[in-house]
Image (cartoon, rainbow over all chains, first blue to last red):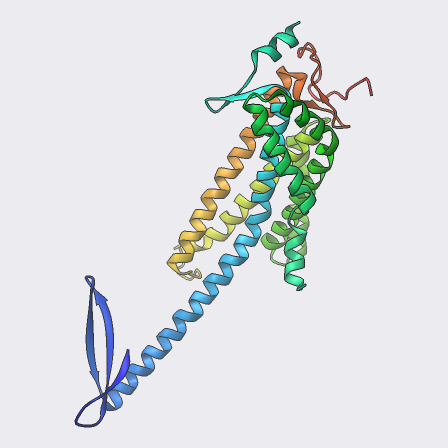
Length: 108
Length: 204
């Protein structure tokens, strides 16, 4: 979106859009029509920028809420795994099973 | 240091605890691979630093819950109080009698995950409510993020419950992973039947 200068003088406003993978340029015109279109585009850009900023802040806020729970989960997984392994368990096909030696020791 | 950084640090494990966790992870990996020396070292490390790691992680869990409560309450002290009470009840209910520190940690995770799920439900509900058409709509990109977070929270919640159930089941049949109130790991056996699951070790 920009104002372009004509060779014979004057300027006109254009919009570039991407449609079906191709960039097409729309010629709006000069004078009042061009100014109004430029103003509308400026407002739309500002609205989108504000929306993006709000979304970014919201994402950061939610990520900050989720992070400690994730950290707690990771720490818990490590501690549980350490206790199970220390007690003689091994993971077999995703399931925790007691090693035979440990089982024999317990049975004895 | 900015106040924001300080605030975030409150909800993170101290670096010394993270180092211990790395050590435990590494030793567990080696011990699972059949390294007997690593397993002995793992037992020693758990005995030495296990209690502190569990206590710190539980502490982070509590702090995370507090932060989630504040967010969910949105500044309303009554809601904050009610949620806090609800969590206490839930914690007590899930933990049962005489929970071991390991079980307490797992319960903290279940409770924190439940709260996160509830929070996302509350955040998503107005976005999906079309009844009056007056709901505040959020950009589609952010809505996708919300859905992904909500899905993750649900997944974590179920995983936390599953893990607690698994540990309880294994502990009930194997005193080998019982961690009593003094966090001593009992690896010497026992009948496993007719004994309370979380009975404190009578030798101590």
